[in-house]
Length: 320
Image (cartoon, rainbow, N blue to C red):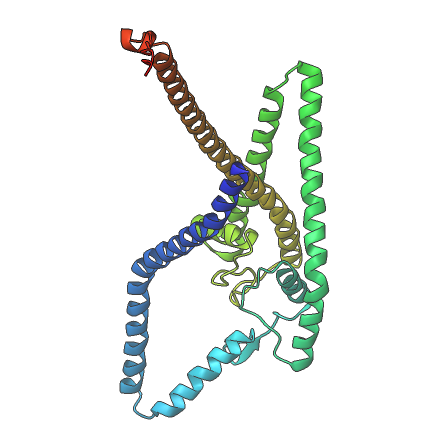
């Protein structure tokens, strides 16, 4: 009964404490990002404004409102995937490969934000498509993850039978699976992005993690540079890489969650053991106090009586 009350008390206070930790962690991230990114944002805004006024000063025939309207039109066209290339425009974001890549980013909930439907029919279809596609994607990711896990367990079992390793085989196979996943999904893809997109290795690694973790900021997206020509297989291969990479990263995150939960359970077990030890010590103290009281009572009962108490003499009543 006491343990159940303590568990309820821990649950009652655990959620507010976890919420405070969560808010504090997010606030810490916000503060650090503001300190790191705010100066660059201010500098970029000042540079853009300076270019704007220099353009108006050097070309007096331009008017401010007309230039502003042209800039807004260029920005809107770029959001729709249209860019100026001399006297022509570049298309290609809504061809089959681009549409296929957008469909994958929609049902995987990555949502880069660089491309979205512009028609009412396209938006309605996107809602219905994601409504049934997201559960399908979750089921598929779970199956792929289970298949990967079964493969790791099968390899570990084979090593145990061949080399008669009990504990080392499982640890070795898990380490190999982790290293292989790191190579295939995080360390090697930036080399491909450097070749096809012109990014640095750090930018490619950043894009890989942001994509596979479904954060999807949209600051780096493949196949969007109008100055580059991409092969037809490029976006399709990247779509498969996203699918299998998300399944692998989900297993890694699940392992981290299990590790944190086991650590939390271990801490709670230690606390429970400490509480039980304190309760036992309290019970022992109470028992010792009770025994001490009993001994005092026994000492009082066995204390030798005085002569006046041991021999009571009643004087005879004198006859009248």
